[in-house]
Length: 291
Image 1 (cartoon, rainbow, N blue to C red):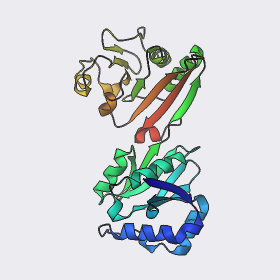
Image 2: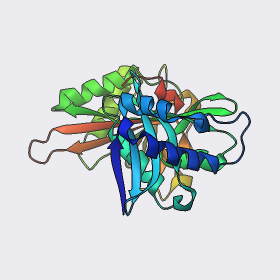
Image 3: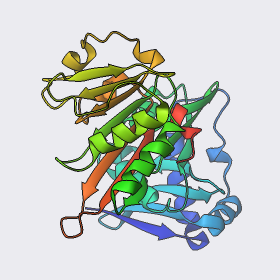
Image 4: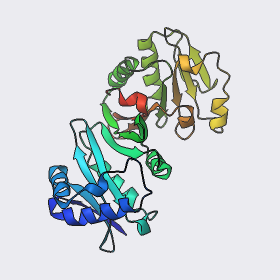
């Protein structure tokens, strides 16, 4: 059982010991990381600003990180887990807890090293992506979801109009939600605001439609597709790099189309029939967009 706790400067000695032990176990880097230069005083100052998180296994401190809240982002600093506890879930638990502290921020950011590919892959597996590269440093981020209340049809249509002002050629939008959740309504409004030709309707029977326009709209229904390979093999008469592609029922299938995408989940309140759209931006492209 892994327990995660929020701590302040009073835990500087304990956090420092874990950070030093974890970073000392890493390969020698050039230039060397500055974590080993941390002192009790510098750690106490860092923890005194926004606190930190510690992970405990049966009461033993096995991992820690420092939280650094900036105006738009929550930075994760000094993320370290003792070597003998790596792979036991402590790092996942720390990061999951940190993400709960990102309320009000656009998301989370951190610095990783190119020379530590396993560490970089760990962050990627949790949904973090590279947004800047200053060799040997990688700046990685994970964007926070945005919930939009849609009390009526007009609100869903207004969201489509807003999205039309944000999308650009090459963008992929993945829509999920049950029958009647508003996926096609949202796409229709998006297409109208983009100025595309042809009525945007459910593409269930043809799987995909291309709507010409200043920026073409490719509207795909992935419900009956057997896998990502079938989606990739769709015979479309337009280059996806030149179009905005909207894929209904695309979760679990369409992610391979683009590492930069906008995922929208539509949920219906069974009592009021009001909808909630949860917008999850993924990739460096969407890190530049304010939803």
